[in-house]
Length: 434
Image (cartoon, rainbow, N blue to C red; front, side, top):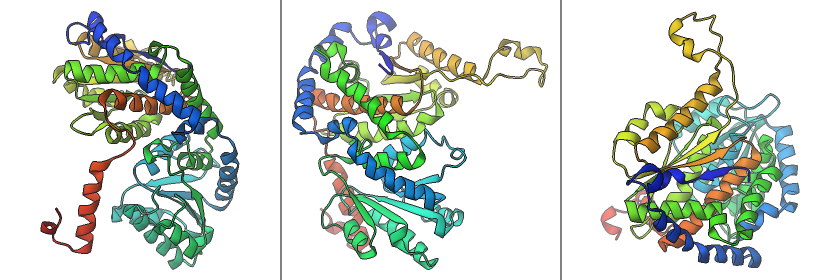
């Protein structure tokens, strides 16, 4: 496996009475078997299309052609979309740009997932119209925020004398929707979004793959990493051999038996910070239904040792912690600059040693305080390992939904807010909204 998972520090016989009884955990794990069977059936029948994406290759050739044109024509690419249309691509882009700019010779990407006017004013001030490309992503083709973003950006392009048709590509369902109509009006290409692939499960589709390829991330390796996890789950004869099933069982059993109401995902790697935001949507929107689900919280080590760890260790014991441990490298420290005996304990160490000590110390501290803590060890953060992590958590989420008895592929409660927002835009008094 590309990663290793350990749930030992979640169990009462390891961390004490605040942990989960092993028999309760094993019973929950046994309950995952029907979900694993369903996933196998879906994979064989094509009933859940995203499960077929790890093995797909033909679609990547079209995406590579678009990416090559974008890399040749533009210095900056702006991705317009929100939620699942943005978070997966942003997570993959972090492999190429952790926040300090891309590697030399690689274009810059900007993921505009909100509609804050100030952000767009700042964006336009940083771009050259002739050298700016746009990806407009909306599964339905009618997401209000995404359409509004596109209208603002296209107006900016036209005001600079640029043709929209040479600067834009869209991804949407092939249907009569506002985005497809906009594309026809201005003669830019639309790539089809499979109606059977939900936004938060779309990272392995063109929604995530096209931004990744433009950024220089190896899309084949992302899918290979995802395939390794999926294939292992499909081949597992027992849930005890399935890492996603184990993760789902420990999450749900802790919630049901121990009152755990939050799941904290805390990687010790800056490049995985956008991944935690992607996970947050996946978990919340898939499981938060009918009064069920747990609150996803994203954290970052070592940073949140200095902001949230006090609460985690000494506040309510109502959280499961998943620490994503990495092998961070070195960057040795030069002590001639300081010449301070108080720093002798750091001699021979580097930045990576400090990060590694932080992740190990945090795991030990949480376990010693009786806090359930799962370890996911990722020796190398790259396209394969991120693809593997994403597939793991998509499968874990679907299996957890089975254990909770909720539908993981819809988000019915969100629609009410959309209706109310539209009423405000139409000037309808809220008293008229039932």
